[in-house]
Image (tube, rainbow, N blue to C red; front, side, top):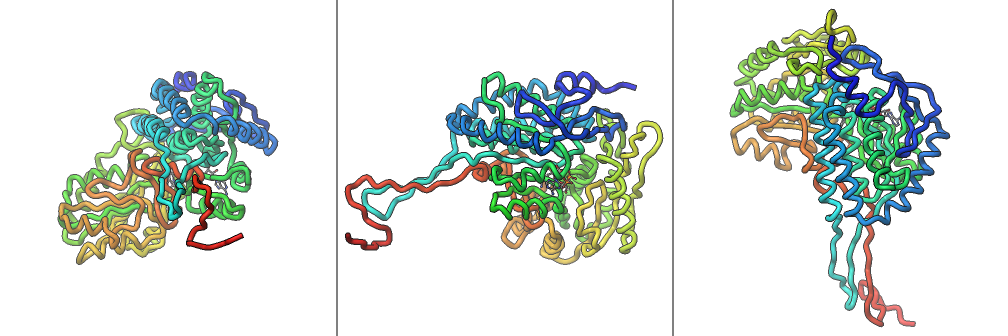
Length: 513
Ligand code: NAD
C-alpha cells in the first residue's frame, strides 16, 4: 500500500514521532502527558505530542507578555512584512501541509490544499490591511479642538480551535492579530495536534529569521483543561474560540466572568431553501457537496434541504441519484468523494442521529451505515445518509457533525420556508436556490435569513476570505477573517486635542474659576 507521500510531508514539516507540544517560537518544551494522534484515514499512529502543564503555560505567558512589549512598537506595515513572509513560507509548504491536514483530519487532499490556500489568502489580506488600520476623524463641537479615534493592539490573543479546520482557523486569527500588533497563543484541537506542531514550525522559522523575540507565536497543547488556562487568565484580553456550541457556552462564561472579550465561532445547522424557481442541477451540486463534503464535518455543511412541495419528488430523486455516484474511501486518493469521520465517537453520534430520526417518525431514503473491510480499517468511514423529516424533530434541530441530510417539505410562499430555516437555535450559513428575484431579495432582506451568511444560488458550505465569517444566535456572534473583523483584535481609543489657550467644556457647560 502506498503512504500517499505522508512520511515525506511529515519530514518537510519537521514533525517528529514525539513532539514538544508547548512552544514560544523556536523554543519548544513540554512536561505534560502525551496525546497520540491516530489518522482516521487508516487508523495508523501519526505521532505523539507532549501536552502543556500549568508551569509550561506560565513560561509561555511570560514570553508572550514580554514579546508584546516589542511587537506592539513595530510599525504595522513592518508587521505586515512578517506576515507576507509567513504567506510565502506557506506557499512553499502547501503540498506537505495540505497532505498532513488530509491525513490527520480525514478531509480530501484537495480540501487540505484548499485549507492551506485560505491561510495564504488571509496572509495576503492581512498584509494589505497592515496599511489600513484606519480610525475616523470627527468634527469637535468645541472651537480649536480636533477629535479622532485610533486603534491600538490588545495584547495576548488566545486561540482555541476545532478539529475540522485544523490549520486555517488559526491563520484567520493570527494573520490579523499579528498585523494588529498582538501576540498569539494557540491551543489546537486535541484531535489534530500534529497540524498544530507543523504550523508552529512554519511560523517559528519566519520569526527566527527576522530576529524577533520569542513569544509572538506560541503553541500549547492538551484538552479543554489547557484551554481553560487561557479562558480564565486576565492576561489574555481576547479569546477566539471555534468549536461546538456546548464549548462556546462554557468559554463565554469563563471569559465574561473576568470581563474579557470573546470571539465565538460555534456550531451551525445550515439549510438550503429550494423554491419552485430553482435550477435543479445547481441545487443538486450545491446540496450534495454541502452535505457530504468533508464528510459533513464543516460548520457550514448543509444539514437541511427545505424543498417546495411542487418540486419535492423531483429534487428528492435527483439528490438520491447523485448519492449513488459517491465514492467513499481514502481521502488522499483523489478518486474518492467522501473520507472518514474524525474518530469512532463521531461515528457513534452519526449512528445515534439516524436512530433518532427514525424514532421521531422520519423516513430514511438513503441508508447509512459504517463501512468495514479493506480500506476501511480505521472504523471511521460511514455512508452519507438522507432522511425525510419534519422541521420540528429534535434531531433536526440539533447539529449532527456527520453526513446526514434531512429533507423537509414546505408549501405555500417562500415565507414559510424562511420560517422553517430560521426556526433552529443556530445561525451560521443559509442559502436559497431560486431564479425569482422577489424570493431572492426577500431571503436577503430583514424578513429573510437570520444567519451570518446568506447565499443565493450557491450552497451553504465554504467561504471566502474577503467577507466577514461567522454566525448569529448559538453560533456565537463572532466575525472573523474578512471585512472589518480586524477591529476585534484591537482596542479603540477616542482622542480630543485642544490647540487653543482656552478650555471650553462640552455641551456648553460653564465652570468659572
Ligand atoms: P469542540 O467544542 O469539541 O472543541 C473545540 C475546541 O475547544 C478544542 O480545542 C477543545 O479542546 C476546546 N474546548 C472544549 N471545551 C473547552 C473549555 N471548557 N474551555 C476551553 N477550551 C475548550 O469542537 P470540535 O468537535 O473540535 O469541532 C466541531 C464543532 O466546531 C462543530 O460544532 C462545528 O460546527 C464547530 N465549528 C464552527 C466553526 C465556525 O466558524 N463557526 C468552524 C469550525 C468548527
